[in-house]
Image (tube, rainbow, N blue to C red; front, side, top):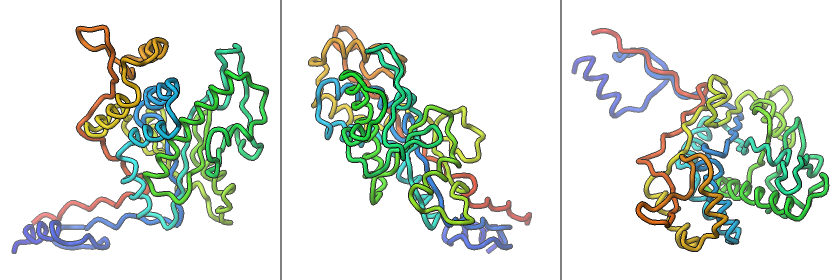
Amino acid sequence: ATPRARCGAGAAGGAVGALGDGPCGKEAAPAPRVHRATALLDLDKTSIFGNDGNDLGIAMQWMGRPAEEVRELYRLLLSPALPPAIQGLRERSEKLSVAIYTRRPQLVTYSSVFEGRQVELRFDSEWHKDGQTYIPGDVVDAEDIMARYSGPALSAEERNDVVKSMERLLAARDAITDALGLPAPPVVVVTAAPKDVAATARTLAAAAGTAVAGEDAGAHAYLFDDNAELRGNARVVQVAPLLALPAERAGRVLALLNARMPPAGLEPDLIAYLSDGNPDELALRSVPGSDAVEWNVPMCASVAPWPLPAALRPTPAAPPAPV
């Protein structure tokens, strides 16, 4: 066979070995493998569909649906690209830590529409570091969080609002835990400031007791995030915003919503709330030719896979030598 034919046969049927010379030129080097890596997961439009599920979780809570149904919803809203991306990191690290890193200012400084004031939400003192709130994985539910509340007194309406926000946050956390097969729920880091990936990874390692002397816990920490403002940050893996779900998954979401909350039975105030906002993110839409509304979950053919961090990708193969 000619050198070019041998190149084709090897590419189709042989495993890629170490970097070396051959008839095809330099072969690709194996992917780097590191001792310890940390995956930080943004939520909105990254790990879960839309902006907090485009208020679908709020709708369920508004209609008094049980917490288990809210968790079922968030399991369906999870990005199909998440599990393969984390598996890729597992294959390239001896130890992988996973945490959620979400920017939700309302859960740091609460702006009350009930009392017209701002409230600094404080919990167990160990949860607050560097202006961020670190909710540990052993927290069971929202009431468990509120049992650690130590900030200014909240009215009944304010407390209920915070509880519902925490319920949705933990529903997303639990969906991620199940999808990734994690042995325990991950820490949820809530911030109101621009995200600091390396510093947050170091704080997580210190709190977990996994920090090792002479080892930088932030060296291989990577944030998966759709925020275009973070583009160019070497510690951020830029992903496409999750604005639609594959047809099969979207169909399951719609089936759940229609079974648990038929649009004809929605409260008028909820319909008004869900009909106000960014047109591309509305959970309800008008049925053409009628006064009725229907649930709206945008569909797509597929979700683009998340790339690996640049530092952990295989070295590209050199072009073949001329023949």
